[in-house]
Length: 169
Image (cartoon, helix red, strand yellow):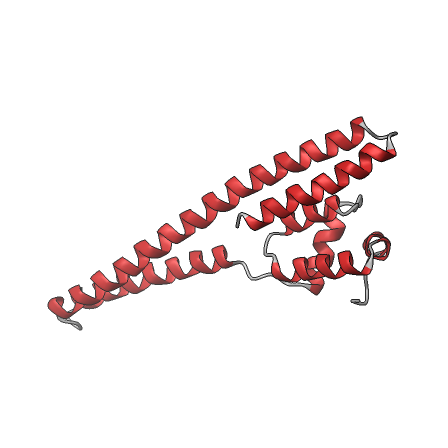
């Protein structure tokens, strides 16, 4: 396991059986969404705060923000198109050769914009579904708090529902 683990995370990981712990750590390594990781941890019994889990994940499992990279690429493409237009106005580049380059860059720019919109809408929709499922799961647990048999059955159902949500990617 990773060193420098906050006590609440350490307690959570220690409470898991080895298979669940390995599955959770693999999920943490391969999932970009810290919110999804937090929801999965909650299903596995994590009752600590989001902030502690987020700090632990950011420190030990840094995530690549693909949306942020795409937005930066969009800014660069816009700057390249503007620079090319300025070169045409300054008679450094011939308009006919610049037109082809501008058309190519514009097409790439539109593709990036569409991809960012797709990523944003997908993440928003998925986040809403998952947060709704989490809310239902937590409410059902609080309703049946004293009945251990029902809680065990709910925990199994939660894990099944979680697996279905994860598989829908």
